[in-house]
Image 1 (cartoon, helix red, strand yellow):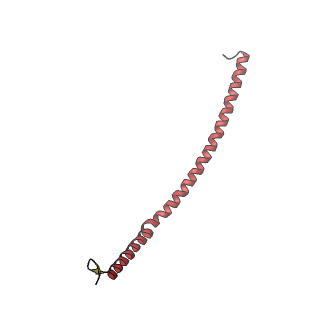
Image 2: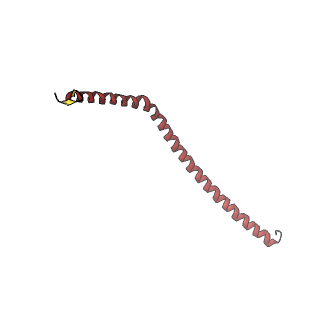
Image 3: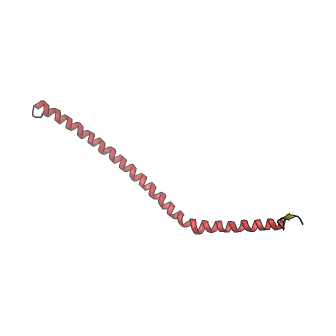
Length: 91
């Protein structure tokens, strides 16, 4: 009989098939028993990141509005300052 390591080619093929089957079972076990619980957590985390991005976008818009208001108040204070200087009551 021809073979390798004392086993025939058919025995080697059977051994490789058995090892592949066991590796597939272990892979499925990890997929459903180990990684499946994390998938729900990952989905929740992605949802939280989306909410965080929306909140940051809202905050950015609010900050831009506040900056515009502050700039307008600065302009108004400058005008009041100039009026007071022209009246001579402010140095």
